[in-house]
Length: 288
Ligand SMILES: NC(=O)c1ccc[n+]([C@@H]2O[C@H](COP(=O)([O-])OP(=O)(O)OC[C@H]3O[C@@H](n4cnc5c(N)ncnc54)[C@H](OP(=O)(O)O)[C@@H]3O)[C@@H](O)[C@H]2O)c1
Image (cartoon, rainbow, N blue to C red; front, side, top):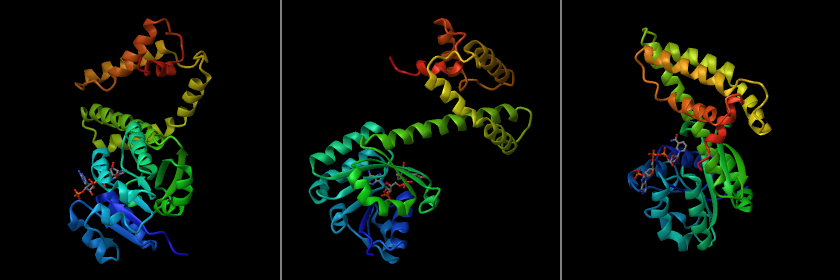
């Protein structure tokens, strides 16, 4: 069966991996990049190199956008709105949920079918089953584009709200960010007694792997909504976090990464929730 012709806008590390994967899986692939020289290896391998975005989107019904950020997407798609009308744009650029919704609204005004994507993978993983790509927006477009999208990795449709893929991406990246800061705190503390970063990283991995299943327990407490299961309380956790902060400072290491946790617990205790299950601090995260 003929595979759909596909255009890739942006040939950085990720766009290049995507264009290569599409070409290698038999898609008629057209590429464009701001710095034209980056199209050369793709053209040499059989892709069509376009000199402009307008030229690049002609001849493909599916256009994958892999530029740097929201601003570059708008900068380069807006002048090509007329040529993009009737086509499906899959925006794989990392953006915030509201930026995704904004681009979706713009696309709708110009009769462009829009899917917003989030790539939970690094370029080397593209085309492998452990690459996970999230999509949101027009469900019919997702179903139509699915064979192309599944070429890149496991595809997951998150819903009609075009901000949903980005929201999940940002939420998971937030969890990763906080986890890796935890590695740094542990490494900084252990370096004060001469333990290498590699050794502490290996210890941290072992410890976190053992602890990870408890995340589901926290979720059950939060979903229950009563915070009275008799598990670890806010007051108990305040005691624990105070020890971590003191130990860190005793070793000459700043505790700035731990302090926000203590503040959230203190706020809860100050409003009479010292006996509550500690995950109640999730309520403190809502901006009021
Ligand atoms: N790399 C990853 O591991 C990874 C993982 C998940 C998601 N992503 C997302 O994928 C997107 C691309 O990432 P990447 O790793 O490919 O980045 P990259 O290697 O830094 O490449 C950036 C690309 O954007 C282009 N670009 C930057 N500013 C531009 C502008 N003002 N106008 C036109 N083109 C512009 C660059 O063109 P030039 O060649 O002309 O500079 C290049 O093609 C980002 O949104 C990133 O967050 C990346």
